[in-house]
Length: 262
Ligand code: BTN
Image (cartoon, rainbow, N blue to C red):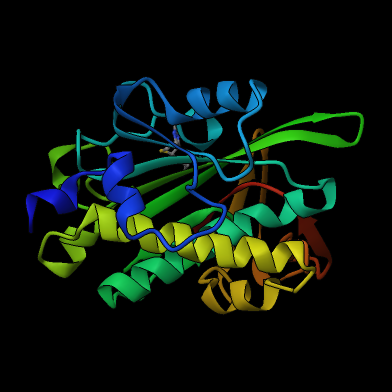
């Protein structure tokens, strides 16, 4: 891989970025605590829709459920995107982000990722990417939303025992290095297309369903102290999971963490 292909700085990213909105304004850092905090602060200070924050390394990267997001320097895509969506678009942003990750992986590497409801992207049953959505909502109005995307591009999952069993990376699956720059450009392009479709009111849930690997399985869903078990029957057009419980009732679940029952 050429040296320039591992450089995510603004100049190299812009050289061949074909988007009109997403990534037009780039805040790039070799190392910061978390791209989420920088993006939220930028949004407060009036950052335009589509502004992105990227880092080569995060010292306190975070995931869902208050977990850490671990990635060695220069190994991953660590990205936050500032948006100013309408309230009714909020529920669909995880679809936009997970689909963009899945489609760009497919396009750049030929690998076949699946989406694990609601916010994970897996290859071969192991997590390769995760999405974190954080919004500032006031009186039914979204001030700003930050979409955090972590994508394991060239990391070695076996170098961290905590994720060795459950995570993978594109390099691990493909057996060769993948250009972070190419992945990032493709990801931003896919994100823009899907976000544009959402803004025009076009349905993206059908496409999302096609990539969802969670359906048709016996699962356990945990959300805080609550635990549900049942058959993952479907998702509604808002992306909520429809779980068929052992008593025959159909439960609509808005958020949670899914594990397969063995
Ligand atoms: C998850 O699966 O739990 C979501 C992980 C989100 C990680 C990304 S990395 C870039 C951005 N900055 C963070 O601190 N977190 C998100």
